[in-house]
Length: 396
Image (cartoon, rainbow, N blue to C red; front, side):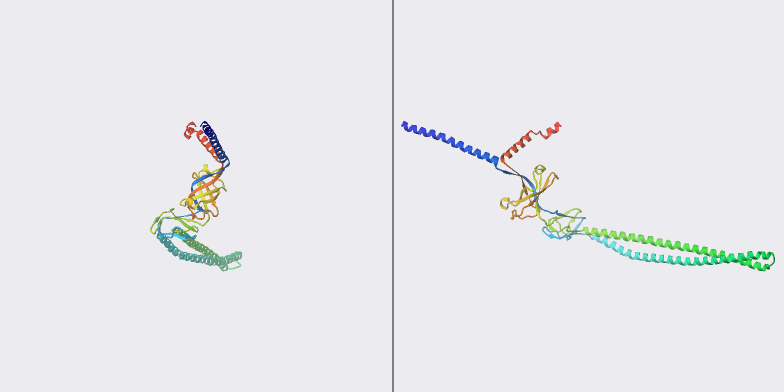
């Protein structure tokens, strides 16, 4: 019996020693494995934006009302493809059309009047020229007769002077001398009459020219005023035509109607109201907004990204893979814009279209778990040691 008990005690002692050894070895193995994983394995770090969407790489074109008006016809249907310049919406423009017709009728009455004034002005200028020629000819003729009379007077004066000595010597009769003297006086009177005639013709010529020039100036003023009215009328017609064009909304570019306001015939729209959005054809890209602290210095072109679309469970449809292409250098409205190019063949089962929202994840780093733990601890210690904002403000 004692021998049997001794064997049992020895067996118990041996089992008690082996079990703790195997446990310690297993714990050591697990610890080493965990340490190796903690130091040598790699973990991808992502920056996430909940505000991401698919967009075409060309700017969309908003269609806005240029004037206030009432809808007559609308060809705005979501998903409809339109060409540049195609009529999308027509507003009531009956008032502007009546004004345009009135101004066009006024212009049609002004144009014949201008032609009549131009003809009258041309005739007046021609008459003035002819009058100048006629009066000039009469004045030239009068001046020629005046020169002739002046020569005859000079001859008569010389003959009278030559006969005066002979009369004193009684070489000629007194009757002969009186005849010559009478002829001299007659020539003088004739010259004076001719000089008065030349003066009268000169005055008449000046008066005719003054009246003719005044008539021409009057016609020119009337013509200039009427041409000014025509210019104003044409400008008014151009302005009304431009206003009429604003009552017709045309497609600013070719594309697909992506958004439409609720419109029907009779609806009232105001200037600046956004009525539709045209999406031009182009390649789709991912656009996301990140906080500046998450993006600046961390996200760079060439990094890998993935987009999980809302409404398409990623476990069933997968994700869209992309590459960061551009990054804004400054924040706008407190966000930094990041653009990514889709990779070919990325999740072909997802229907892609402009405006689909989702969540973008950008792989910004590849670190070991130990580095991540040390970084998180450093951030916690830095946050704990930093004084509160209120305390800093009070200290300052």
